[in-house]
Image (cartoon, rainbow, N blue to C red; front, top):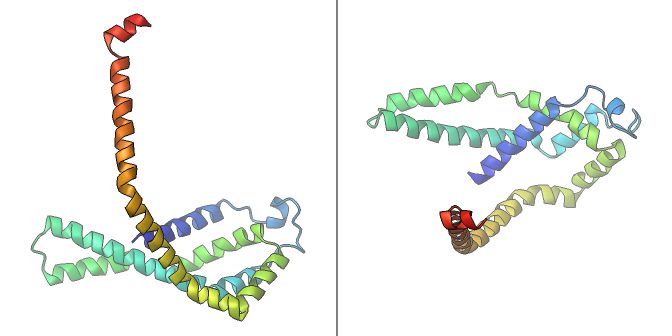
Length: 191
């Protein structure tokens, strides 16, 4: 679920940032001219190499599953004895909501972002790397590495969380006590 939330944030940030882009990158970025800006085809080749569409479809599927589960839970709160037919209708509604998700539009909107931040030679070097056997291995292994890294981070946080919560609780109690003492009539008179 956390992974889905991070992906949603990524898509939203990319989409919002893309809409803020100016139409001609070479005119808006100091030091960039038409010769240094990667073409749309270059960027699309990179996105294809990175399996961006498949990642977005996977993200969308995760979002859809999460929303289906949430919608079903909410529906069951209102109708505890929901029938399979009612739940099927709810599934149909959720599917319909996601049916026309604009993946192509989002990918298209991301092109100017890559053109703004990478030069043609930068993108060529990145494409060369990810086209190499080690680049392909990194692409293949990266999801597992990220999942394992997130799990390791979560394990550390869960181990540290009780101490963090206790320290926060103590600090909040101290602040509250100081504030209560600060508003007492004796302290006000001394000021």
